[in-house]
Length: 240
Image 1 (cartoon, one colour):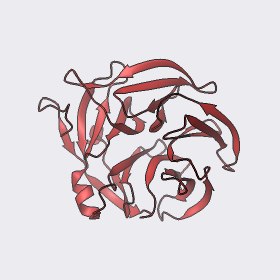
Image 2 (image 1 turned 60 degrees about the horizontal axis):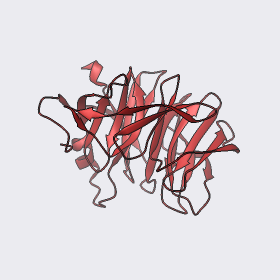
Image 3 (image 1 turned 45 degrees about the vertical axis):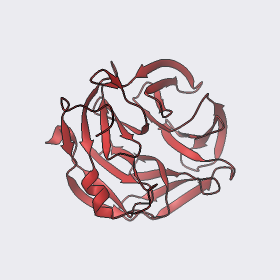
Image 4 (image 1 turned 120 degrees about the vertical axis):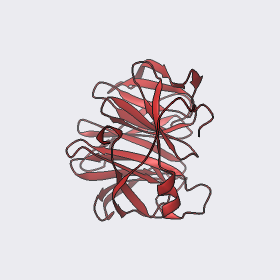
């Protein structure tokens, strides 16, 4: 369990619906589904890409590389744009969603880990227990939310996804996804994807669970990990 986890919070094992191929060379940092396409960003300097993929096959149909000196991190869609940022360097980029051509850039402070959006704001994580809510367009911080579980701060918040009024967050280097109430930051429960981690059989210590994508059109939730050979559709907690 995460250090801040408590036996008082529910822990639900992820139930796999089906699995799909995933590139074992993709060090997943950001994941989202838009209009039936899977968008994925990857990390490592010189190996950081943003790719549009076929969900069912994992085949890349479009790809752009961020500047080779930078370590790519999360992505989020907003309108006809795709926002991305990097781990260190406080640099963000704006891409045209269809062409994946860069159209603008932006700036933030600290580290960049992951992003999602709730229809009103872009939400970013930076490895600390504090999530930032950004105004789309200007990307200015309009709100900060401290995430806690049973009153204790939860750090290492990584890949994010907004699903059914909750913020889901991979807890880096663990098997758990936190279910966060966006109103007060309290963790409502944990999704345990440890069985999926075991199933893929990865041995690299860096190949941890990371990547949550929700398809609003089909109401389906997908998870994967860094350099994992599979992308899994899992049942949502509300579907149990």
